[in-house]
Image (cartoon, rainbow, N blue to C red; front, side):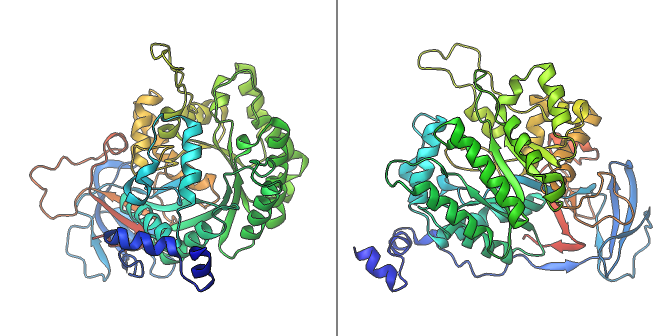
Length: 484
């Protein structure tokens, strides 16, 4: 009752108690994000996709901030203002999170959620723990953890991301409001694409209230109308049965078309061959609703989809045909999939463990389907391990997909960079830099006139994918982002 009374007067009792208990975590969130400095000349860098050892200069337009010229390096001192000396660092397009949960990140780093650590590691437990965590969310807490994620991502070279924020009868609009504020704060440094997301059931009642699903749908539709929201999404597999899951799909597709939003479905997150993959029904609804004509050029992302790793050759061929013309991309999430999929039953740890993550490179090269790789979750019960660096999952892919050639590495880099951006609807330039391309770049290695004694320089794409090292310089739209 006290909490309800204080809430009427603008006081969040839960937040104030948490702030008193953990004051060190509640630093000011009003500080300005990292400063930007315009650059018109990148001097003395390496271009791994052109020549990994030769030095080049890249000239940028001071108006459009695009690449206007790529020429051999001129070693004479430059009198051009806004010059950045690259000191032989290799440059590649910036990185992208095509699928990351902004509101659930770093729960394990906040003592407020210490009682919600996993005991079994099961997927059902992760769903339950996250639902309980949401009851503790406050907007300052969401801003703090979300800013950790975005700052660490930008420091790694991420300039674009699709960030999921959940909306339901428990958390209501707290997560989306925090997400929109973070999007505003980091504008010019990172394109934070906000996806209003239905993690909870929208057609199945939990038993607490009969109209809970209806309320969740109403809140999602209201959130989809908020300025700055770019995408809507849902998880049909949380519904009580297949009929309700299909209703979930129909509803979210219709909503995306009506509100002119990108669409993101987290789908088929299991390895049960006896269950028909929901992806077939999703593609059927997209065609029936006329996504190719009515989708307003928006994209569709299908995340996880571990069930389809059990497809026969004929089913893969069918999938290739079905997705044609729909701007559908698949997003593999290996860190989460490896942690969650293929868990043995009690006392059967000796059995084979089918880990079931999408074979992303094969889908691209053999089927011609666009696909990307994402981080998904960081520091929570769904994925306790990993960091905000997309190259972490690209490097994991070398072993996971047995992709160890230079060509493989280039494809893996694209999956966390150019292909990932394309999947979520951003214009993207090829991996090979060229005149006219947007200057969203990462320079790998320390920018020092003298090579550090103990530093091993990475010159090729495969070296960067396998082990990029900690030193990175980030440019967003031709502006240097100072993360120091």
